[in-house]
Image 1 (cartoon, rainbow, N blue to C red):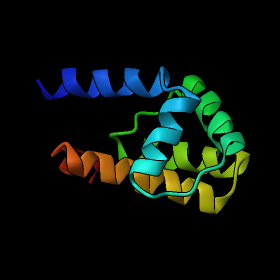
Image 2 (cartoon, rainbow, N blue to C red):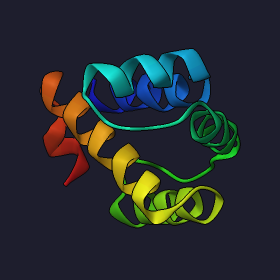
Image 3 (cartoon, helix red, strand yellow):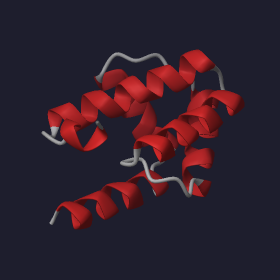
Length: 94
């Protein structure tokens, strides 16, 4: 069941829209500009790294930092962690 849920989440990341990302950033009070959101969404669509694997997640956020900034990548990481915690799956990201 865990693998199926992780596949669904990974698929959701690939289909995330700028509007979705901005909604979540406002909900969790994390600053992301529209331009940064567009760049992040574009990168997530191309991402081949597994966000549930620590090494894959690190590569993914390094790529985000290179196309946006370290602060923005850190903000997106915080957003991911807050969303995981809200849904009770933060242990999947350890």
